Amino acid sequence: NVLRLTGTGDGEILIGWSGVNGAPAPAYIRSHRDTADAEWSEWAMLYTTLNPPPDSHPVGAPIAWPSDATPAGYALMQGQSFDKSAYPLLAIAYPSGVIPDMRGWTIKGKPISGRAVLSQEMDGNKSHSHSARAQDTDLGTKSTSSFDYGTKSTNTTGNHTHQFGGYINSYWG
Image (tube, rainbow, N blue to C red; front, side, top):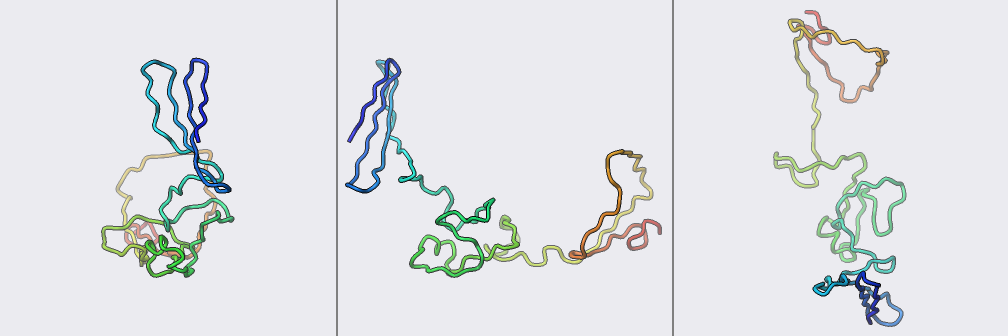
């Protein structure tokens, strides 16, 4: 089936569709400008709510989502098993049949260390210390009237020390 729409001096549009009774029929469109040497464009598919575009994310790719409501056709990554025969494309990404539990994780690129894809980065923030000496350096003077220099606090996770001069947590030494 083809529907031809003709404008007044602007060109023409063809809309074509095919399908069986009761099923959504994909529709295509092409156009050309109203000039003697104008070529028809290639046919392009029209997307609708009954014929949505294909998903632009590969199956199994983690997607940051800004809502508690999971979109239809997607799953939260909470370590759950899935039926590999029912979801063969997902099984390509996760051959174990288990979607990784991404709660509390950050998506990072694969390091050059050789760590396996989908493996945890262990001991990424091991206990460590720093050393620095600034007592012989003129750091100049900086003044401000907008910063609140009041007490700031953190929790003890990742607790470590800084050494200044000769003593831990002390500049003087």
